[in-house]
Image (cartoon, rainbow, N blue to C red; front, side, top):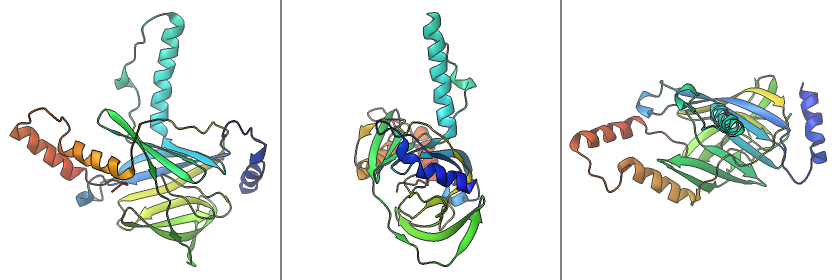
Length: 254
């Protein structure tokens, strides 16, 4: 299996230069504590990373499944000449709606705040790799590395048997694929559950209003404090909002 994957990587140069086509697909189980005061209560989501040696796209499996279901219903309606009958309640609902597109060493995150999508470019990470620690993840020998990302310390495990500098979310920059990464408090944990050869076009799945990362964080906090600007808010609604903010206090972008 591993030899087969390496052969796929070596033949990546034969792919047309006009489009970026993935060589491999990794699925990660992502768990996150939305409320750090109850860190044992985790939300989980299957996340997907399609990548080659130059580019990647990272997204929720449920997000893409929902999008494809909507596109299928629209296509059926168009072919029949009828109005699309889309019942979103019957479709899978993703818990993670952001996506990450990386190309030539740069990474762009597209995420929703209220009814608007925003896209910002994120910085790369600096890693410490002088560790002797090793472990096996889904059959691949992995080495340890650490980094500070948005004021939190993360420990990653990467494999040189897939010699491409990639990983989940914005994480990359190691001499191999990141198969597991977790912050020191255990609030966010990504671990690979499968790797397979897959040919799919690598393109941004969403495009939002271009902002800097600091502008994105500012807009997110402004929305949390006042989701309906210009509209009066009674005391009961304000108390509900404050309770919500306290429960959902963990985010990768801080």
